[in-house]
Length: 450
Image (cartoon, rainbow, N blue to C red; front, side):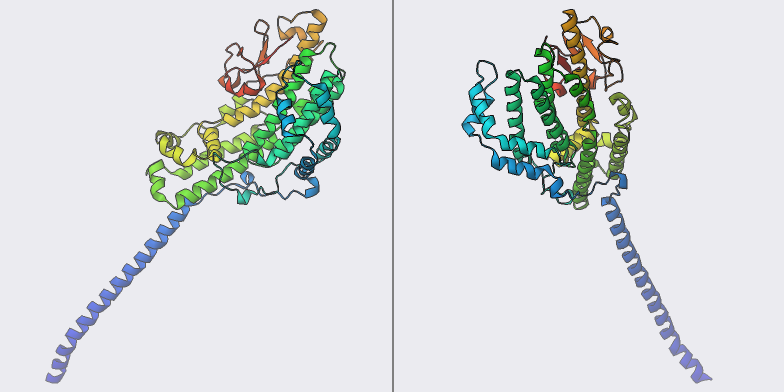
């Protein structure tokens, strides 16, 4: 009995020790599990913080354009066939007045470039103008030194030759042939504009259509008496050549580029994230606000006026306002590169390039009004007091201003047709007119020069 008690006393310290060791092991295991769980949670939230889920209807994938349906390759051939010296190009660009125009030189250039005109007609049969190296999934960094026009140089050289020939025909009195060539130039610009690319490339198509094409149609309306046969039909076609589909594609591409940039930059540098947006601001909420705005624009662009669409866009949330308060840091990340300046203008400011798209509609409708005014002026020898005098003999109805859906504006004293534009307020129209700088005005105007 005494031996049993002694053995029990000896075992008690060992049992207590084992119990303490077990508790310690349990504690260490718990600590280990907690640490592992913490690591998993941190990784999860850090990944979630850098992850953006883009809705399927905002995703734009690479487009594999068949070579036989791509005007880009046709213009490569046209560039090889182009027979005009640098000296001749400089001379032509300086021919701004009838006194400087050299019919013999232009006629000779046209004659030796017949093959280029044939290829231009062939390009018009294609559905796309798509540089083969452009891939949405492999878009290179774009900076201020990037040559945006490089991919368009072949096309631009051929198009300039079309415009030279059109001007030559106009001076020869062949106005119908002039109109046919100008409409070809506008149509080709529309094909380029609606091919899926970055917004700058889309804008390049707009410039070709507007500056090189529609500006000359307005010129022939103002300077011709009598008006050429078929001009009314050509002007009516302008509104069918909308660039809105190209704008939608460019919006999606630029947005995906923006999201990828944000993901790459901020997910790899959370200190930068905190410096730019602040600890209390969730940058994903900003992206979600942008996605909401983008969906509203894409779904309503064809049906609503600029004012109606702006009203539908969400108010700037406090998170965006907070981002704006850190503007210098935001600029250093988003604005220094041209591609991200687009996103800043479009979504933080809501609307620079949206305005440009609606301005296209205004220019097309203003050209139709200009034609009606010219016909009235030829018949009556003066301009009407108001556009109402044009209905129904010269217009079936007065076109709406695409910015606010009111009747398009007209001022006889200033001799302008104008829109309320981004101001969304009738300020009487800008007297300084010029089709190349319409986007810089509050009430952009088309001049009446007859």
